[in-house]
Amino acid sequence: GKETAIIAQGEGEEIQTLSSVAFPHSLGLFYSAFTEFLGFRVGGGEYKVMGMAAFGQPLYEEKIQKLITLEEGGFKIDQRYFNFSAESNTLLTDKFLYEFGAPRKPETAFDVKNAPCQHYADLAASLQKVMEEALLFFARKAVEKTGLQKMVIGGDVALNSVANARVMRELGVELYIQPAAGDA
Image: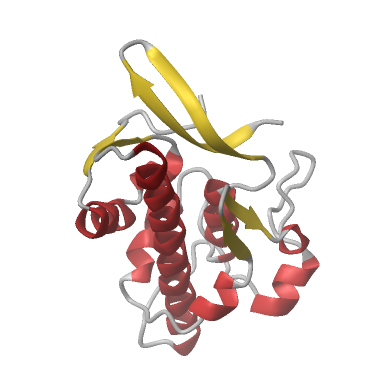
């Protein structure tokens, strides 16, 4: 299967994979699904979700946390809520919509004085918190497995600067972010 996350250790010219997570379990797609729900373009609007999160409170953290299981090897995403297959034009299932309600209409004005906007901001804040905890968990596993204090993060999730700051602050690691984030 296609790997969506790995913990590897590099020395000289050698890179050894220590653990991995395979598709469809993906932190990036998990975040992108909420990006779609919050009314932004998948594969380009994720940074807006991180910005929206600053206007909310993590009131739905527990509800979102139930969709992801952190485990020894990494994480598992509850696939009943998501459709990560290429054939679909949405990342969300009916079960997701039943659980979280109506998605925010794309390109609608965002004003936190407006109750629906505050609801979406609270969802974004909750997602951000869950994402930070997942990334911290995964990074902590990497430090435990390698004993190293220098870490490289790549891929779209590596652009979540708020989560990266927590990884550096809470784990005391020296972090290098591979700048050409993406799946190439």
